[in-house]
Amino acid sequence: MDGDHFKDLFNKASQGDAEAQYKLGTNYYNGGNITEKDFEKAVYWFERAADQGYAQAQYNTGVFYYNGYGVDQDIDEAIYWFKKAAKQKFEEAVNILESLGYDIDEDENYYDGNQ
Image 1: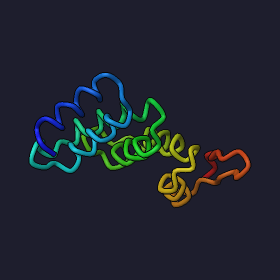
Image 2: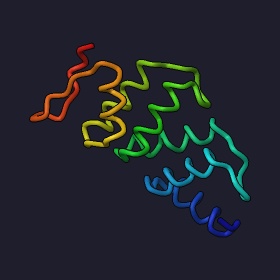
Image 3: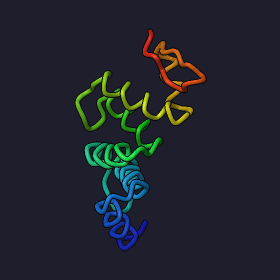
Image 4: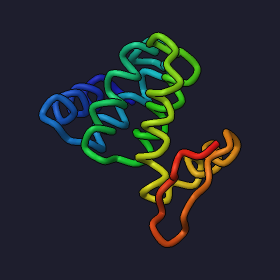
């Protein structure tokens, strides 16, 4: 990614574009030739996109809270975001919730929280 592309992406993200917010978060997560790896900035942008219903960002936000990447570890917050992504049938979120002992009601596509 070159500097001009990054500036364009940052401007779109700042204006509320969920996909741009997700991509910016990914850029900060991975680091590269334009940005240093920065988990605090990554989770900030993932959470902005997650708030708008972007399923991959909801899952990523959950992962960051679950592992304490760029934020204080908060399992309840992680589960909250995993459930949001699972409601959209985001497979990785479904899998992690199942691995944590949550059951899903296929008709409702909602985790009931039973462990």
